[in-house]
Image (cartoon, rainbow, N blue to C red):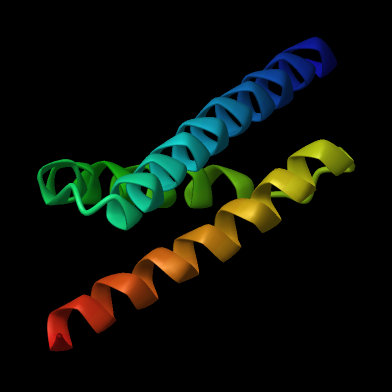
Length: 94
């Protein structure tokens, strides 16, 4: 039973890292193309960013990890996600 729990925790951490890195790459790609004024990519990636943010949020909020790298990745993704939301909202009014 204990071995099964360790396996589940490893799978959870692995999925968290993969989804957080994918979210980070999507957000960085969005902001890169935003500043280069490539709107085709920006509209295509918005749904992906939202889905990745929800997926990583569901997994990472279940339990706090002692992993400092994972916590820092969560912090960076959160700041970029909030910046993305603000950019979308400001873009609606411009």
